Image (cartoon, rainbow, N blue to C red; front, side, top):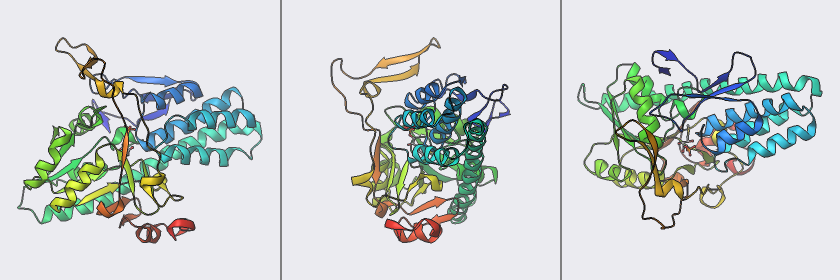
Length: 369
Ligand SMILES: CSC[C@@H](O)[C@@H](O)C(=O)COP(=O)(O)O
């Protein structure tokens, strides 16, 4: 993604070759600032406090967190401690656990002297692979957008609704849900994106809108409650969202509010697609509602809003009645029956055990078989 004319990934190594630089997403869209992570604790803090967020980027940051820990102590005990620390940061996105398991598998059998180099190489490979997976998701999703565009009067935009931020900022580059949109726009297909603001943290209004604007994609921010109305009036041609964990049977956990959009889409005959790289599939799970852990975040995210005042200063503003308690489940589960298709790096699968098994036959032992 280009910001101010320069291409950025969302995570990279500092000039010294070991410090890890990330974009501080808590400062966007008002300030583009980076943060240097120099310890595993700093990486864990960045994930927990959402300096970085989005399932694939959480996994990539955790992988580098392991490398940072091993620089200090490359023993088995230190490795296990770093895996536990980083694994406890956020519960819903399975990419975190996938990345940590991969790091452990790569490192545990190595002599201590080789671990640091191998850890950086593996974290780098996870990042490079994420870029390739997201690009492939973009290509497959582009086909869907193109098909819809061909059925519309010439020049009329394909109206796409998205929820939360499953774009460049949520991954290492490209994004998942937004990758097909970038490719469609670049291919000259007219697209227009309805961006759900995505309360409570406003990842749509703050991050997706920032990205789309930086790439020149026409879009409009809408309140989370507007999607159903727009669908009823024929103003949404398709929905594309990301996911933090998808079961082997095609149930999809994503940012709170996704389920309501899927219900509205079903009622209005609007195709509802979920874009995901395969590390987001939890092959052990068959029932998303019962089995996917849903993160509960602080009530303060509901009662207070982050924004910029007219004098240019940024800060938090209370919007709820002082003293009122708040409840803040951060994700919900959309059952597979409401999902039109899962856009993966290998193609588009029906949201079902059979559909996923057909695309990923090597993973189909257990519940997906
Ligand atoms: C490609 S990212 C997919 C999901 O991680 C994204 O849609 C999402 O819900 C992010 O939640 P967040 O709480 O901002 O980390």
